[in-house]
Image 1: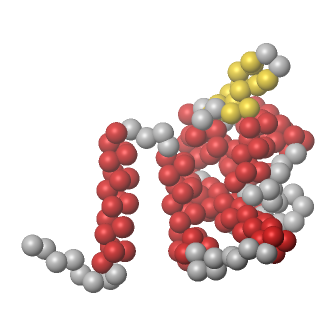
Image 2: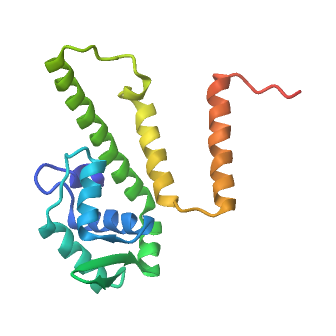
Length: 183
């Protein structure tokens, strides 16, 4: 799946990149340059796709009816179509995994950057920062962040549903595995 596609050099297989672009277009319409910057930002600078990669992918999405384009002077604004939304839904798990992986890499890159900057300036690093754990919790946090981004914008009922899920999770974490007592 993603592990094979995310390699040195191209970093994404063409089909995986197209799905990630569709997911980003599902969040909101975007220009090609915005997609480049967003992927760069989410990966902490690790993955900066060139225009020669992004624009052919956008052209393919347009030609296959998964995205449509609107000319805005010299720029093109791309938006996802209903067929594109269906494709995102069909591939949601892989997309979430890919976006979470990008964000984990971004966090690692930011951490490495902070370490090198800290070494140069002689300041202490807070190694106990729970947000920097390297295990399952961070992976789950990144998956949650990606899931929330993919579902946004949400309706009032969807926001209530998501809030309920998060509140139940927080309660369970605070209980520390103890059964809930009802009063």
